[in-house]
View 1 (cartoon, rainbow, N blue to C red):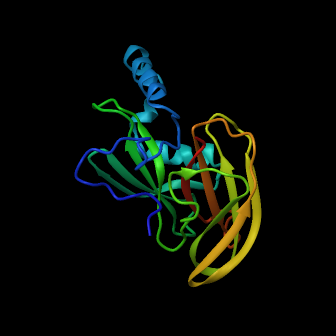
View 2: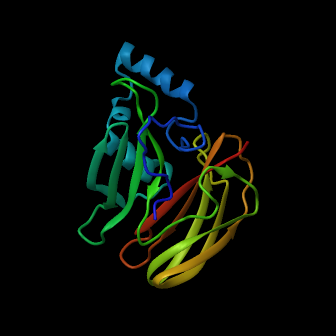
Length: 214
């Protein structure tokens, strides 16, 4: 069950309620400012590469440094779905990162809007809902001896806004639930991320959703 909506026939608009901009840009104005810098001086060309944007989101923003390999790559129009996996040979895809072009034209940068989930999902709080602390999070998971950690992040801050660890879970498509408190939110959209691991790496699977602050 994906945490982000599937694309429809018309061009979706980031921030309109259907899709939320998680990272690296918090507003369309920021994305357009990067486009101007890129045209004038070639600044940060990785924003035009969905693979590099997905890895930067995973390793840089979320801090999951063991995940450093692209396991799948699908681009369709303004949408990209990029599988990211552990750098080593062990373990499968950790998540399918869903990205969209933020803006129009060939130089519109890629923006993370969520993840598409199968065996590990984060469906509560609802995607695009209003953020409140404490926040009840939850979804479904398939696995063995899983310990779920939940974090709340925002692009403008390197520090976590909140974290909660760890809910024990496992079985086949079983529900999980966990509460997390957070503070210091100032960006319009926050990232809620749930992760699990401990078998071959600290983080082996993760799932994210977006909540709004106003």
